[in-house]
Image (cartoon, rainbow, N blue to C red; front, top):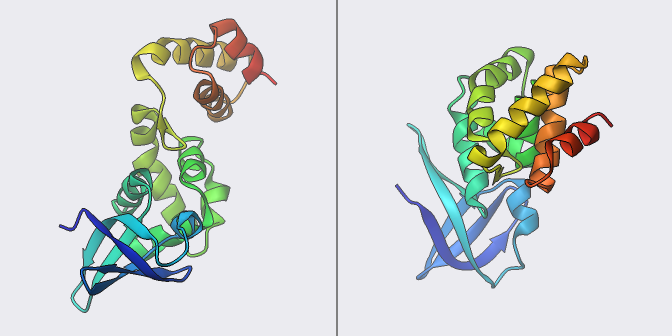
Length: 194
C-alpha cells in the first residue's frame, strides 16, 4: 500500500495532479477540496494516498488532509459507493458537511450530490451515522469524548424533551461543542435553542 506521495507538484487540474518523485511522475486523482488547498506547481507537496486496484487499472487517489482520506475510506466502505463516487462527494461537499449530513440523517443533502440516488443516500446514512456519532467526529475534529459525552447527552435529553427533533438538536449541540468544548451545560442548551 502506498501511504503517501511526497514530491514536486508538476501539473495540477481540478480532477488530478502529477507529482514528480525522483524523476517519476505519479498521476493522482484528487477532490476539489484538495485542489483548492494545493499550492501552485513547482512546490513540494505531500498527498496521502489510496491505491485502487481494478482489473483494468491501478488508480491513485490523493488527499492533502489525512482526515479527508479517512472520510474517503469510510464512504467507499458503503455498498454502492465506489472510489469515483466518493471523490465526487468530496468535491461537492466539505468533509464536515458530509459528516454533518450523515449524522443528521439529511437525505436531501446527500441526494443532492451528482450520482447519488435515494437508495445509496439511505445506505450511506444507515451504514455511517453510528460510526460518525460514536467517533464524535464533525468537521474533521474530535470532540473530546470523555469530557463532553455526559454534557452532550444531558443537553440532547433536555432539548428533545422541549420538543426539538433529535437530528436538529444533535447538529446544534455538536456545532456549539466544536466551537467551545468548555461551555457550561445551561449555556449549551440556550445556544442550541436559537
